[in-house]
Length: 187
Image (cartoon, rainbow, N blue to C red):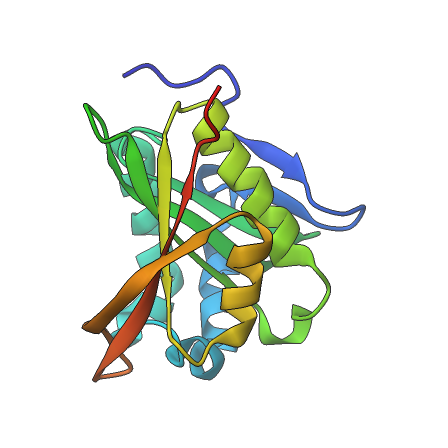
């Protein structure tokens, strides 16, 4: 697959916040985001080793992503307010062939919640992977008690498809997840 002309993507979310490709981000700032939000994000992600929160880890992540061809198997985006990384929006496990789909994951700095930033960021990313990469389906799953994510996804056109029991290990515990998807509108 060839990389779209708009690579690496860079979008304006608000006057002060931009959404950029991981290859444009400072690995130290990404590591700092995860360290600042370690406890907050533990409520919704798998348990991570201490190495995950280091600059060296993120230098390696950026290098591996760049080498793997951004946009081929994943699109990793970073929300940035000036030099400060405040969130991530990731489209992973991009399937091609007859499926043309991916998974969506996202997280936002606890101090930046409630400002509509993630809604705008996910919308921009969604439109990019649907429009530029030609995907047909984006799947996003959330914990049943995560009403903020449920509302966000519903407001962006994601529809509930079911409940997966003991779907993903979150902070060391197998947790059920609500399955949702966004499907490209028919022409």
